[in-house]
Amino acid sequence: MIRRLLYIILIVPLFVCSSDSDEPILLNDNWYFIPDRESRGIEDEYFSKDFNIDELQPVIVPQTWESHTPENYDGQGWYFTNFEYDGRFSKVALRVSSVDDNAIIWLNEKKVGEHYGANSEFKLNLTPHILKGENRLAILVEDT
Image (cartoon, rainbow, N blue to C red):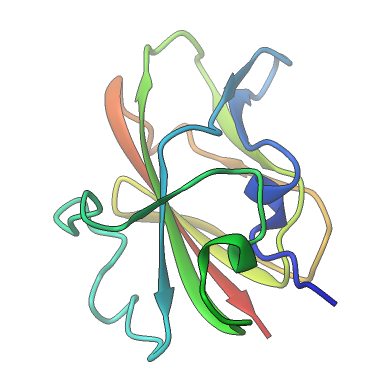
């Protein structure tokens, strides 16, 4: 059975949207991935804007991480994207369709939420942390 890691991004699109509107900003482009085989990403602050993602493996989403790792890998992996936000919404939420199994999400170096359990939708309030202009989204996925 192929595991569906970061199913939110990989199978169903990931959106930033107004929390009072259905007008989404689709975030399926310009993603990067790194497996975290030693589970050091939090300690080494992979979520920091100073963490250089330009040399990481670019990945196409939606897909499972098995499509861009050479082996059947279980453990932790990080997904990153930078995106522009034009400030058009007064409230902003990240809608995540599903993750297999657990996820911790950072926006601009601030932890904005956690989700435990596979394949269930969740929404996170990004309003206090989103910036007009460039933003960095980092998602740690743990496949247990």
